[in-house]
Image (cartoon, rainbow, N blue to C red; front, side):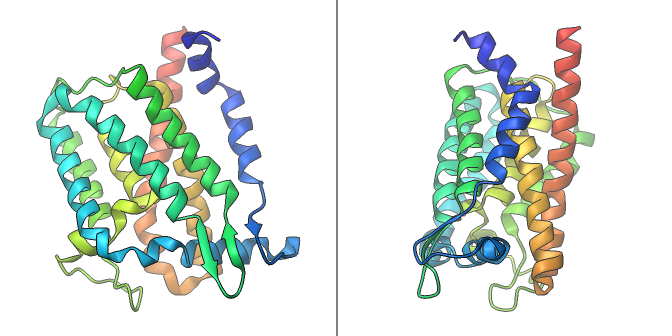
Length: 261
């Protein structure tokens, strides 16, 4: 299959078919479960993922996230390949540690749907590594940069008290929030960077990241506003992801239409 054919498939309705198919793959639970338990089990996996046992390495990865964002903005085109590699590895890591849970309640539990979707985003960024199209050579206008950078910084900061899940604007959370190991917050950062440099970005990467980011973001809004309303503040922090993903999906479709015309 040619490169152009893969690009066409990655920006066509077949992408939506694939993503929707993956969306309904049930979780794996070693202790077994009934179909009606799937929403509760999925919520349990996310809130009890092995990521929560890795707090000792949060500062390292948060520093990497902050450094990567600064490099992509200030370093110009020479940092575009490094960002794509970093995004690919970040998505692979978050796919695993956010969607695997080991507990006495369910044994080993894996959200196969979320894990597969996030690995698909990793594949989209790997595509940019192999066939680069992102062009960061021109500095973006300030009126576009300011709101997108604000949302990216908020995502890395993730001002949530880990004990109460209520607002906590302590600056130390810029290093200890663990947001750099989460799909949703890092997708806000990566989409913010792509939208800064739009339209000179990889269309396939933008489309896949936006589509899956939107679906997972909406899923989190259901979890945090409806299923577990005590996490409402966390839900509010997911609104930028939903907004940026919807914008990225629209712009990628618009660019595709203009290119095809």
